[in-house]
Amino acid sequence: MAYTAPPLVIEVVSTNWRDDYLTKLAEYESIGVQKYWIADYAGLGGVRYLGQPKQPMLSIYAMDRAAAEYGEPLQLRGDTPILSQVLTGLSVTAEQILGQMAG
Image (tube, rainbow, N blue to C red; front, side):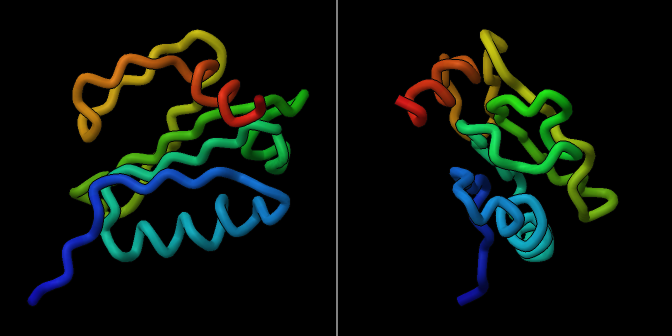
């Protein structure tokens, strides 16, 4: 049976945030995961990932099929709606997801 990568992986950042932003990102990219979401509800990641001042952020990486690698992430916070081709019918904002994790 051939391996098929999951279409979506969602990681919730904790104190080992480097694993999510570096190690797991590279691993998921190498096995062909099409979408990788990093939910950094406490703004733990580095400034290069979250900006300054660091704030909670949902980073969405999408596979560029031609290049076989992730492009620049879509970074969402606040009331920005999340549109997902994998989770069709999803009706939620970045703030709702991040707020539920923090609460």
